[in-house]
Amino acid sequence: APQLTRLIFAALASMVLYAMGMVQNDLAHVRRDRASRPRRPIVSGVVSPREASLGIVLLTLGGMVLAFLTRPDASSQLAPLARSSAMIVALALVAAITFYNYVASFHRWLAPVAMGLCRSLSVLLGAAAADPTIFERADLAPLWLVWLVAGGVGLYIAFVTAIAARETETRAIGAIRWAPTLVLFVGIELAVLMVLRSLYIDAPADLPLPAVPAGLPAD
Image (tube, rainbow, N blue to C red; front, side, top):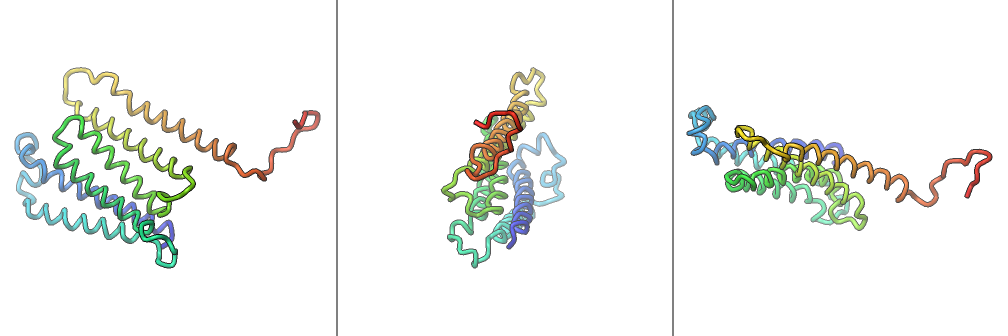
């Protein structure tokens, strides 16, 4: 499939798995929601636990099918592992979502880390769909850029999640409120440096240089 088509399937897979995580979150937190959120669909009886479980299974299968559709054609002559890279990331995303809902969400400091991991894997899912060989290239430059973006998004979401968990507290949040802004600032700076490096340091040797104005030394 063309790259744009693979990206569309990857975006749809990410959204479907996100929806699966929301349903799974409600199912995992039924006991807590009975006390604090009685209007949630499962707690209020609008959706039964059995229906929610069925929805989780169907959404997971749908997300994996969409991830499968990101595989390049057999004529691409890629290694089997490279052709399945998006599916592998999607499986890791399902595992991370399940870990967050049933384990990490019950721990104050583990929850932001797990949520950030889920967002990082969503970015990597798109990267694997756009270029299935990106995780096995000898050229590390594109790989570092992917990890930079995925790690930055994950770190940003982790800090936002940690702040959101304390929004009902009466005491001041503290210096952590500046963490998301700092992550954005550092991420933008690193992205600019990567672009400048690709333009001026890693540029081909035969790239034509600007002409030297008359009267100036040409070195």
